[in-house]
Image (tube, rainbow, N blue to C red; front, side, top):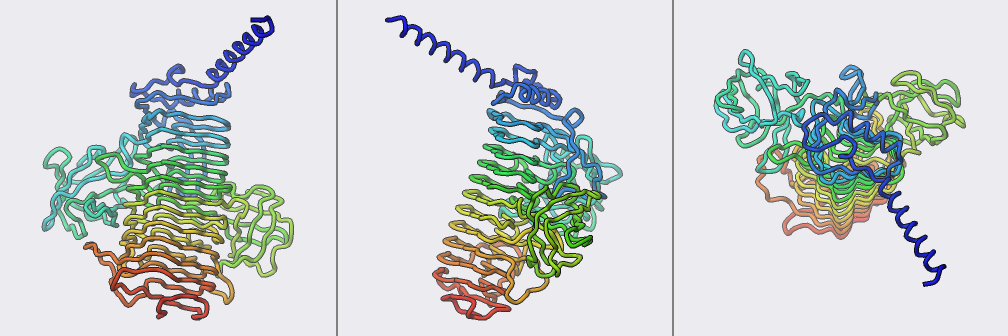
Length: 609
C-alpha cells in the first residue's frame, strides 16, 4: 500500500470518527441530565433545565427513556398567553399558563419520546412550542392523574333515586348529604356542563347535573353513590355521566408563532381546556395523533381536539383518531375583528368581540386584510397593514396603505387574509363527540378525504363563518370532500341532522353575492337518519356527485325527526350547482329542495320539491 493511499484511508477514518462524534454530541439523552422515568417525582423544573441545555448546545435530538414522568404546575414553566377560544376576562382574568414541556425560541429539534408517558397533575398545559421552527414531537402518551372531568356510570334508576359507580380517577367527598368533586388543587363548583355517554350506542348526549347537585347523596359502598330526590332527567342505566367546569383556563397543547411543526404518534388520553391549539403558526403536520380516553374512562378532551386559529402555509392532519370529546375534534378558522371606529380614511380601530378570544396579536406589519360587511359577509375591499397600535386587550388601531371603502361602516369586520391556511385532512376517524366532526373556514385550498365520521352528535362537517356570534372567519373558495364515510351523524340535532352543512351566518342575502365558493362533494358514503344529507346556503359553485346514500335502519332511542317529506338535499340562495349521478338504496327517496333561487341555478337529475 503506497503512502498516498495510507494517508487517504487515515484521513477518511478520522473524518468518520469526527462526524460520528458530532452526531452523538447533537443527541442528548434525558437520563444523563437528571430526568429519570418512574420516580414519581416532579419533572417540571428539570425538564425546563434540560430543554435549555438542548438550546444552548443546539442539539438536534432529545431522547427520553420509556416510562412514566410526572409534572406538577408549581415548578412548571409559566407564560402569560392569550389564546383563542379559551377563557374570558371575567371567567379567568389571569392568563398565566403552567407548561410541562416548553419549547421556546428553538430550532431543528426532534423530541423522541420512545413511548414515554407524561402524567400531569392539577391543571396544566401539557406542552407549548413558541417562536420555534422545524420541531418534531413524537412517540409520547399524555394523560392526567386526576382528569378535570368527573365520571360515573349509572347502575340503577328508580322512582326518586339513582345509583352510580364513580370512576376511580374521579375523587369526591360527601358533606351534609351532598356530593363534592375535587382534584389536585381545584374544585369544579356545582354548575357543571354534563354529557351522558351511551356506551351501547357509542354516542354522547347532552344531560343535566342540577338534579344530582340538589339530591341527597349517600355512599353505599366504596365509589358507589345513591342519589335521592326529584331526579327528572333522561338518565339511562349503563350510561356514563361526564361532568366538568366550563372555564378553559389552560389548554391541551399550544403552538404559537412557530413554523414547520410535526406531531407524530402522540396519544392524548386527556386534555384540560381547549385542546391542541395552534395559533398564528405555519406549516403544521399532525400525523397519528390519537385523542382517545384511557381504558376505563369515556372522555379524552375537555373541549376541542385540535383548534387552528390564524395559521398559514399548510395544515395536514392524517391517520388521526378522535373519540370522547366534549366539543369539536377539529376547528380551523380565522378571527373577525369588528370595526369600532373609522378614525380617518386610512385608519381603523377594531375590536375583539367574542369574550373567549381577545388579547392576542391578530395582525403584523404588511399583512393583507379584508373588510367585510356584517350583514351579508360581503367583501368590501382589501388593504395592507402599515401600522399597529394595541390600545387595550380588546382594541387595536390599524393604519392602512390605502383608503377604506366608502361603504364601510361601524359594525363591519376585518379579516387577516395573510394568515389563512391550506388544509388537508385524511384517513382519520371522528366518533363519540356531542358536537361536529370538522369545522373549517379558510379561503385556502381544503381537501378532506378518506375519513370516517361515526355518529358525531352534530354535522360531520360544518362550513360556517360569521360576523355576529363566534366571529370565526372566513369564506371558503376551494373545498373537496371526497371518499369519506358519514355514519348516522347529527343525533343531537333532531330535524336538522345533515351530515354536511354549509351555513354561513349572514343575516342578509344580497342578490348576486355568495359567501362561499367552489365546494365539491364527491364519491362519499352517507348512512343518514331519514333523510338528511346536505344543507347549503349562499354557495357559488357546488358539486354533489357520485355519492351513495342510505337511510339508517338503526333503532336509535332518539327523538330524530323522521319526516320523509323533507328533501335529502336543501339549497338556499346558491348558483352554479351540479347534483348528479348519486345513488340511494332501494325505496329511499332522494330529492332536492331549493329556496331563494331558481331551478336554472341547478343542474340535477333529482326531483325538485
